[in-house]
Amino acid sequence: MNLKEKVNNLPTFPGVYLMKDANAQIIYVGKAKNLKNRVRSYFQNSKSHPQKIIKLKAALKDFDYILTDTEFEAFMLECKLIKEIKPIFNRMMKNPQSYIYIRIYKDGDYQRIEICKDADKQDSLYFGPYKSKHTVEKALLGMKDFYRVNCSSPSNKNTPCLNYSLGLCLGMCMGGAALDQYNERINKIIAIFQGLDISLLSEMEQRMQEASEKFDFEIAGKYRDTLEAIHSLLQKEKVIEFTEGNKNIAVIEHLTDMSFKLFLIKGNRIMFSEKFKSSEIESAHQVLKSNILTAFIKNENKPFMKISRDEIDFAQIIYSYLSSSNCSYFLIPDRLLDNPFTNLDNEINKLMTSYSFN
Figure 1 (cartoon, rainbow, N blue to C red):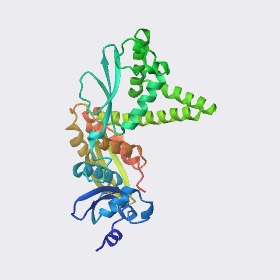
Figure 2 (figure 1 turned 180 degrees about the vertical axis):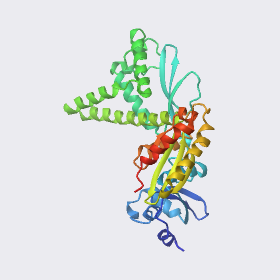
Figure 3 (figure 1 turned 120 degrees about the vertical axis):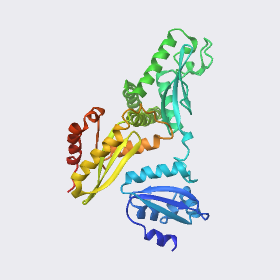
Figure 4 (figure 1 turned 45 degrees about the horizontal axis):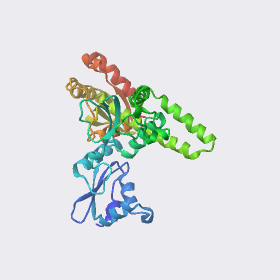
């Protein structure tokens, strides 16, 4: 059977596909909501394909696939397989070393902000991990310029730096009151990432609007790009904060008029999943309750988890899934687990009734 015939015989269900070369080595892993449509797209409109796809097609000699019940599971499985197999054409997720952190630390009288690859210094505050170094650099540079804390003199020998003459430095390189202002503004940048003070965003939006009204589109564009970069990092911080809370999450997803699927998720891990017929709601209720006790109570003493760069992709997939309209879920507070037989039933009933099976 040639490849096009094999594609035509693919199912239209969610799943993961594994592209292979002439040596039967997996060179690319992808996911799809509809396997047939997705894989078939590689063999259509070849002139419009990016260079990566053209090269992939040239090397492609065969493929396998793995079916999943949901697109969410296809995302999770794709992520897992890419990390395990590290296919040559999967550039985005195969190297967790590409993730970076923002580090804030004390250097004498100065609070310093830098980009680093590891969060391994005990005397430092870290944010991240982030996938795009370019986005982090753009956000930090924009905030430093806005607050005029972009000093270009690393030695700080009480002489004005070049950026001071350009209006990008308060003059902390000369010490005195400017140093106190510098540290206060660094604290404001820290507060942005902590979600404690995001007034900078409003101020920057106002400056962008003013620049646009004056037809200074270069300055307006700079503010716009900085704001986009900051929002991207703050969204990632929401993902990290949500996942590091190590919450107990019960999820239900409608599959067809005749079936649905239950998931139990803790942190960035799927603890349990099972498919049911729509007529089996009572059975699903009991199965869910039993597995909540097994999956969550056994793990209730697990300490607060810290998301590493190896885990951030799974965390992002789960966060995006829960934020979508594809599922309904509820968080199970630890207090409910203290007396599950009286408190848990009500919450499970709410989950079951919150989703229509008709």
